[in-house]
Length: 285
Image (cartoon, helix red, strand yellow):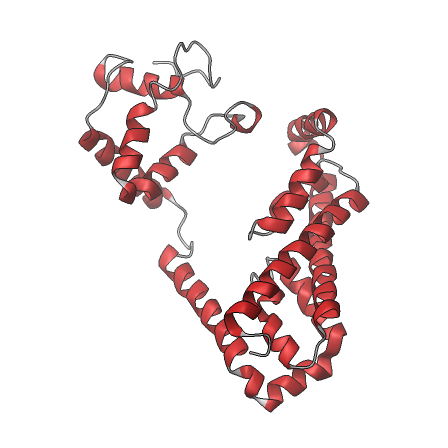
């Protein structure tokens, strides 16, 4: 049997009807959300980000095709128990098919908990340790700048330096210069990400020629919108900026424009984090 159409709305009269049982199941059984989200991402249609509703959801046509092959009727409504068994089984199969050597999720959670504990310890206790304060004071703003660059390039150090803002204040750093240096340093880390994206584009040659052409066409149609989204992302989303900076470098977006967007976004993000850390731990730790 031939595969389903890739278009999100092709040949459909009611694209929401095929997805309705899955949405009802999601609201009724929230413990299935991880498996449902995994299935949605695994079965996402090609080019989902170019068509409404701009979400990586399985196309209604694909779901109807799967129902046709399973029940002989594209309009069939599977029982909730069967949907639950399917999404759990498919998530388990995808885990088994992953390459060996990947870090288990449990290890990642332990590492995140360890980083959070270390951050809390630094802000609560290290401020009272004279050696730690003296070391930070000796490094001064140049040392803070280097740490912020490493923090900005999240592949090296995934914890924003702004999380340690109470400790820096306790060590004698002034609030406004501290936040300015952190924002500037994190933007320097994002610059490394931009250079990676640019180098990747230059080295790809013919292998990614098709992707380059689509990326340039997207930039031609929406020249300013991605820069605005990058600013909002850098300012309010606690994820690595490289997720957007590298693709935008690949799309030949101007280096000054990209860096300006992330700089202002980083300033907002780090100020918000610093205020939050001060509220939680106190300005002086």
